[in-house]
Structures are given as C-alpha cells and as structure tokens.
Image (cartoon, rainbow, N blue to C red; front, side, top):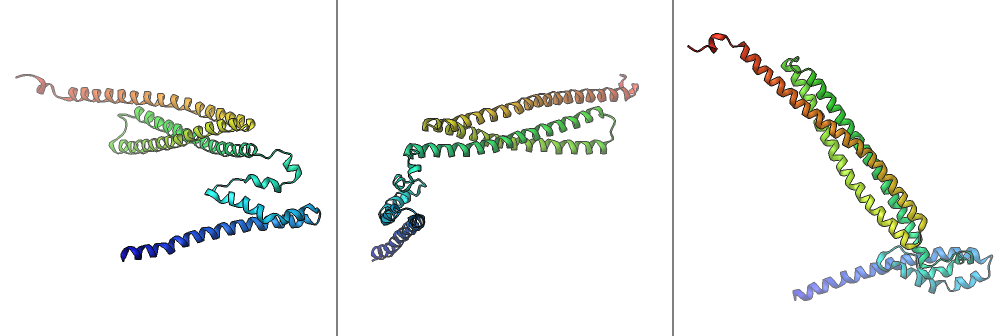
Length: 267
C-alpha cells in the first residue's frame, strides 16, 4: 500500500515536470515564431516570395527551435540558413563559419579576463613592493635610534614596525591570490588561441597570442622589481640582527665595567 501510494504521488509530479518543460519549449518556439512572422510579414509587402516563406514558416520554425532547445545549448540551427537573404547566404554561412565566429567570441572573453587579471596582479605587486619599502625605512630609522630612545618611545616604534609587518603580509597574500587567478587566465588564453587557430580564426588566434605576450612581459617586469626589493629586504633584516647583536654585547660590556672592582677581586 505504501509503495502504491508513493508511486501514485510521484507520478503526478513527474508528469507536472514534463508538462512544464513542454510548455517552456512551446513558449520558446512561439517567441521565435512571432519574431520570424513579424519579419516576413513586413517583407511580404515588398517581395512576393516572402508570402511562400510565410506559408512554410510553421514547419521550418518547428525544426529550427526544437534543435535550439535540445540540451539547453545556445547554438544557431543550420536549418535557419534557409531564412537568410541571398546576400547572407553567399557569405558561406556554414557550421565551420559559425564555429569560427564562436571561437572569436571566446578569444574576446579570454582577452578581457586576461587584461583584468594582469592589471590586478601588477597593482597588487606594486602595493606589496611599496609596503616592503615602508617597512625597510622604519627598520632603518629604528636601527639608527637604538640606544637613544627611552622605553616608551622604543615600544611605540616597535608597535609601528609590527603593524607595518602585518601590512606586508596582507599585501603578499593578496598578490599570491591574484597571481593564481592570473595563471588561470594565462591557461585559458592559451587554450582559446589554440582553439581559434584550429577553427580557422587566424586573426583571433594572433590577437590572443599577442595579448598573452604583452601580459607576460608586464608581469615579468614587476616581478624583477619584486625580486630586487625582496633581496634588499633580506639584507636589511640581516643588518638589523647584526646591529642588535652588537648593541646587546656592548650593553653587557658596559654592565661589567660598572661592577665595582671590589666585587671582582678574589679574597
């Protein structure tokens, strides 16, 4: 009984889904039918052959729109070529032409994606370099002031340095995240350029390859600046550690000199 009840309740839902899909397809086909009928009705006043096209519209439109709805893909059915003007038909509108145009659209999209990710990556690296230069300047000022500051001033300087170090870390994390997006854009652009070349869209393929080279050159230029700045950052850190070690040893020597000779003399 439970099985029968469940099967009976599931059946109307199944039929409802299919009826909705059928209504969607019929509505979608009706929209296309109205569009083509409006075009042909306007042209029938000027061309007698348009009346024959209007008479054959339901059958042709049914074939066309059914092929569009299958799978939910936005493709142009080949049967719609019959509705084109003689001038458009002489352009050689075939599946190869449609694929070539589609590959050109793909390269346009990947070029936009690559341009945006390249700009974001270059800006993030520039901000990262700027943050490191600010940190190095603070560390240099602190090293020149070692031993000249009171505890309160020294604590204030260290708070500023610690805050700047956090800024450097945040800028580095952002740069790494955008670099990952940029690498994905590079990969997509390479695939789009290859697809356009295989489809015969030579101009789109060459444009995509040119944009790839420009993007890689721009990123390589800022990466060289980044490597140089990171090298200076490491040198500044090593110098800071050396200065602090010298300052600590000097303080130990001064403390030993302040001890009275009577405490150092053996009885």
